[in-house]
Amino acid sequence: MKDVFNIGGKKLSSRLFIGSGKYPDSLIKKIVNSSGSQVITVALRRVDVNSKQNNILKSVPKNIQLMPNTSGAQNVSEAVRIARIAREITNSDWIKIEIINDNKYLFPDNGATVEATEILAKEGFKVFPYVLPDLITAKALCEAGAAAVMPLGAPIGTNKGLQTKALIEIIINEINLPVIVDAGIGAPSHAAAAMEMGAAACLLNTAISSAKNPVLMAEAFKLAVDAGRKAFLAGKGQTSEFADASSPLTGFLFK
Image: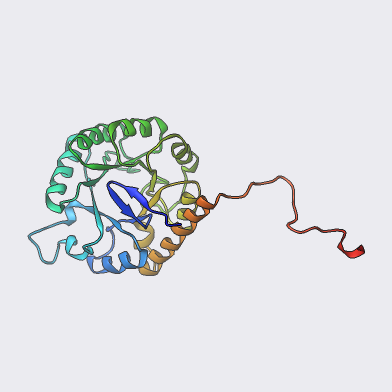
């Protein structure tokens, strides 16, 4: 059975989204190929269409879906402005909304994110909002026209894994939009766990860029996301309080 991921008007075979920060442009193509990813996030500040050396878009394969982000935005107006500029420059109507005014933990501003999502969705953007995992916010984003909801697993860049797993699972079970776990995933096992509980996809960057061998780690995450997705589709077996042998333990010796 072919598992096609329909999102933002696209049909994808990969459920691993990757970032483009923290490693040189020259490594991006290798990471894309190794990960099998079909979606990559790009910060607008790394795009310089007038530069031959400092334009990250030249390093991204042409068949990859660009998801510009509003990194650096601290309020609604800044996020909306960055999104509009990004669409003009990249010709992509996908946008990842990041509105962060907390300089210590880099937590997203959920209220401002909902407001920006509603504005941009009405303008035809496919909006992917990055938020703290909160069911009320997730439902508001559904009403605002988001293409997906992207709750963090742990503070961004920490590689701590699914510290908010219980909250993310509630969102997965209670809304009809795809849930993409974003931020905090630090090991392939974290990604597999997110997919096993029903996440539609995972987005990560630091876990790959901080690895000793980023290209190999990208492949490891590809396999982990695939394995977690297959486990979810297969349906995990029930847990039991007591042991239950898979084969009979008695009787066969005395027949």
